Length: 102
Image 1 (spheres, one colour):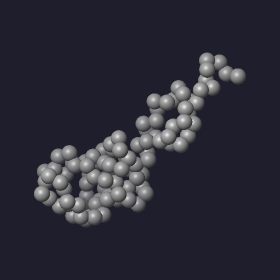
Image 2 (cartoon, one colour):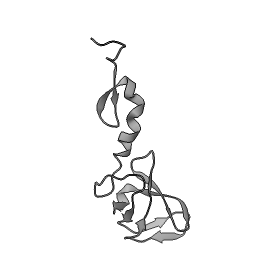
Image 3 (cartoon, helix red, strand yellow):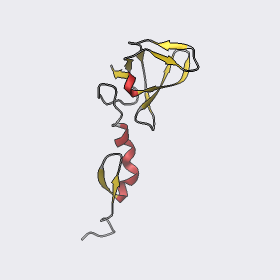
Image 4 (tube, one colour):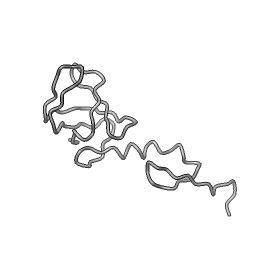
């Protein structure tokens, strides 16, 4: 028996693990590690990625060609999207299925 009610556990659906209730709010770094590119490589803030397919950019009348390098990505709350900047395009969000880590 433990003191202070340390027996309470909560199932974390993001990681598929049972965690102590005291660590319930500490799941954000674990989710960040779950962001993967098209090849299955883990992505992190600040990584550079390469496009694996030509992509038409909505609202910019522009096409980003296959092989284009995007530098300094930022992870979002959605594990399937990354936020990035490219010349002349603000607020560019790319799906992780169309990028490969450099």
